[in-house]
Length: 146
Length: 440
Image 1 (cartoon, rainbow over the protein chains, first blue to last red):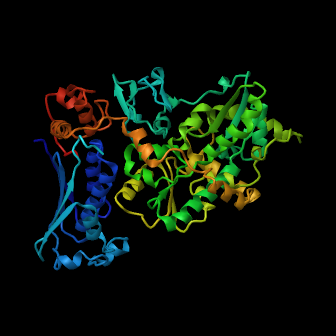
Image 2 (tube, each protein chain N blue to C red):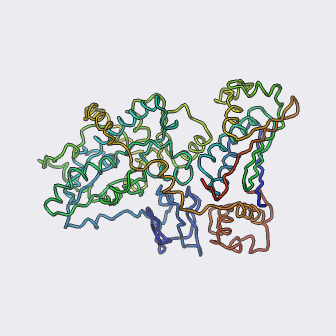
Image 3 (cartoon, chains in turn brown, orange):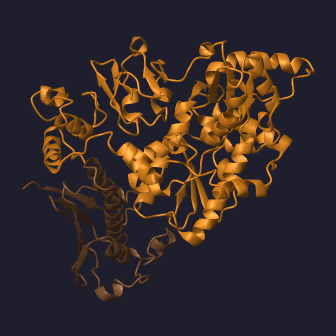
């Protein structure tokens, strides 16, 4: 069974290079000519996840795993962790720093956007233990095609 | 489709002039250039006609595929569709002098773009206004004016095709008006008519959004401004010396009376006279790509309209202009002082045309996706695995010595059977170079 696995580093508070890992992920999906609407959903999830890691501190990585029928995206960081996951999922709830807000980030829509665009999402986090967000996307089989 | 490996639909390579500097290799935004045997530039499809390779080639070995003025044959009626960028090339001449100069050169009709720009801008703002209610298209909408941008989106950001504003471009409106009102007059008398588009870029007169069927029937032959500049300059100097009585043009769109057209040649000029709440103008190839990436990742949904141009400073910075973009910009600013901005078409007239669907492109976003989708075969999961494995074996320096712009593209070429692993110079030396950096 063929599968492609690749990881991309995320550097905390590096707003200049923020988003580059997501762009690399997209370039792989585009080379495989996945359905544009699906690429867009993955791009949004990937970017929001990457920005969460950049904003809330803690270095991390994006893990991309593509299999025949599904794509998994994991965004792991060593940041402060999430105290109340349910609350963090509420649209508009944000604990972003003043610095991040001044740059136009931290509107509190990150996890909401990820939840809306991924087929499944799982968040594993606790204070002081970093955050691991895993998202799954179903891939149409080549026969069905986009 | 073009089958010559040394040319695309928009650019042409001249081997005898190539010095082998490889400067063109890395500037291509779609990585369409490969170099074989040091001085043989090949194009492997996906050219968007941005002209970046023409701009960077100091030896003049890459030129536009546009027509030379000597191809203006005398046995037919020649109609010039004039890009407003042309006016900005002549600091002391008025637009009517420029158009007269063109007619002296042998064009029977010279069509000015300002009326069509005005109609486009109003129709675009109208679509945006209605879209606030209907939400029929996603925000932000993207200007369809620069055809290189539309092709860039089709090839590299297909998920953004629905964002391209579905309103016909000014040049498409202009070409249609000529097709419907001017050409039949001549054809009824058995005369052959050819349209020329005098413009600053190699992207041709037709953009994918224009509606191909009608445009193909009466294609406009593109001529670079730089090609006609010397003769036109000479003619205009003659015109300026004497107070000439010139033949009054026949139709309302054969004259230019406001500064609107010149303004649009400048970055930000398209949106300057559009009534929109929040818009952004982003000129430059690198900048356009950066912003498209951000839009694709979900940013800027609070912006209604993006004006992208792949050239710095907008069309004034086109590769086929004759004077420098900053001098041209200064000329535009002077023209704005002299002419001011004005309206020539009643709003009710435009609105009536809008209701009749006269601004609607034939080609939908979905149609464009199909049109561009099949150009390059998709890589399978197995091939992607192989590419990742090959990337472990090459230097990762993106040196370009193999003839591909970067290591990932090279690995793709190998997997597609278009290059051999031996082409990598580090392979030739028996393995990896002294220090390695990972390739992303």
